[in-house]
Amino acid sequence: MFRLSFALLAAALVNFSQAQNESEIESAVRFLFPDSYCCTVLTLSPVAKHVAFPGQSLYNTSVDSYFDVKSKLTPNCIVQPTSAEEVATTVKVLTAASLLKPCKFAVRSGGHTPIPGSNDIEDGVTIDLQHMNSTTYNAHTQVASIGPGGRWAGVYSTLEPLGRMVAGGRGSTVGVGGYLIGGGISHFAPRVGLSCDNVVNFQVVLASGRIVNANKNTNADLFTALKVNYILEVKKTFENENLWGGIVTYPASTADQHFKSFVDFGLDPNRDPNAALIVFQGYSTASPTNVVRAAFDYTKPVARPDAYKEFYAITNNISDTTKIQPMSAVAAEFGSTTTSRVQFRTLSFKLDLATLQETARLYEIMLAEIQAKASGSWRISCLHQVWSTLYTANSTARGGNVLGMERYTENFDMYQSYLSWSEAKDDELFINQGLALTNGIQKFTEEHDTAVEYLYLNYADKDQDPLSAYGADKVAFMKKVAKKYDPLGIYQRLLPGGFRISNV
Ligand SMILES: Cc1cc2nc3c(=O)[nH]c(=O)nc-3n(C[C@H](O)[C@H](O)[C@H](O)COP(=O)(O)OP(=O)(O)OC[C@H]3O[C@@H](n4cnc5c(N)ncnc54)[C@H](O)[C@@H]3O)c2cc1C
View (spheres, rainbow, N blue to C red):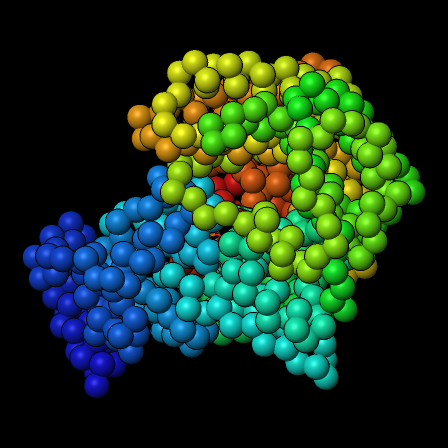
């Protein structure tokens, strides 16, 4: 019955449209559907029961679950499909309705990207995949099927009791869908590669509404290019073991020692592939001491493994949470929900001590400026991670991806600045300080020949261009694949948010 109603409505409007020019059609549509034409059409379709409007509790709960407060927008309605078929129906309805007036939409999984408009939309429809959050395990194939709207906490708590694990987010609260689209760096990355390279099949809703599989035998070009459309991932699992992991906090005065150890660790040709590491400088109003932290995560149940022995020589730590524990507990320590405003930015550069020291100098300038001017509560963290050729080796062994990693024959430092603050009036201060920090580092790296072109998409800000940084050949490949699977460019036109290949 819903289908019939929609068909009749569309037919009536199409007849009407034949006699009018475009702006008259739009004003007629606005007259007929003052609240929102696209949402009204959805309420006449088979996904009607999943459509929520402002003021309804489902709508408010969805909006409240964004990680970054400034990314909470007010879409005309939110649709929460529960299956790939319902996603397909939603896409078909919005695409068909767009014949009269464009129905712009956004997609979100965990809602963790702090770029307003990347995962939500004003004056449009947000497709919220949070109800597609199941994780199931097939013991015969040792493969887990994971819904895009899940959070990593749920994935780990399902797999751990079964003695299995996957390479997923380090923070429990991060969403599955967005994380994998950017590549996904897990604690297991040096051992098994990026998370996207551990996917054995993507279930994809094409812009036509057709549901296809993409894997190494079927739609193999889409599989390689993917991380672009609606997905249900199927991931190869491995045996679950406890990790030795946690965060050790030291006074800021140890920054130089940490950077030296980090460079040695990153350049070690015999690096232990079980050893993951993040070194970061940080300060927060909740714990107002300028600190350096080392997050050690060793993916075997071995306490204080030799891989980090240079760091153990750094004395006077303030706190130490390292212990042997399951991945779910490690992820809980890294997870966070916020009621703050957030900015991420990223850069890459060579593992060069002078460059790391310059990042610390610029961090101190930024910290002083923020301390002098900011109000409310706030936190800054500037993270250094080793982007390892081990990721590339694992990726190549699994068929490759589009991140352009094979251009790099040496490990490098993948840097992320992460600023969060409570007051909207401080938006300009924090956003400009974060920009000045990465601009300053970029300038230094260009002048000292330590710049690395790569930009990690999951940490990039909206003015950054991570897709171009994958390299011209990968861009050309992604454009070709997008054209093949979405020849009318529907997703490129109707989905304005996020990093899109048509913008490159
Ligand atoms: C606390 C925290 C910890 C983090 N830890 C890590 C980490 O350990 N490793 C790492 O690599 N990154 C990490 N990140 C970055 C994280 O991977 C990205 O922010 C990622 O985009 C989050 O995924 P999401 O599903 O929550 O994102 P969302 O904000 O929901 O989506 C991000 C983008 O992907 C698109 N998208 C989402 N799902 C789909 C889908 N199914 N189909 C098509 N498009 C989709 C959205 O439209 C949006 O543009 C972390 C972020 C935070 C805030």
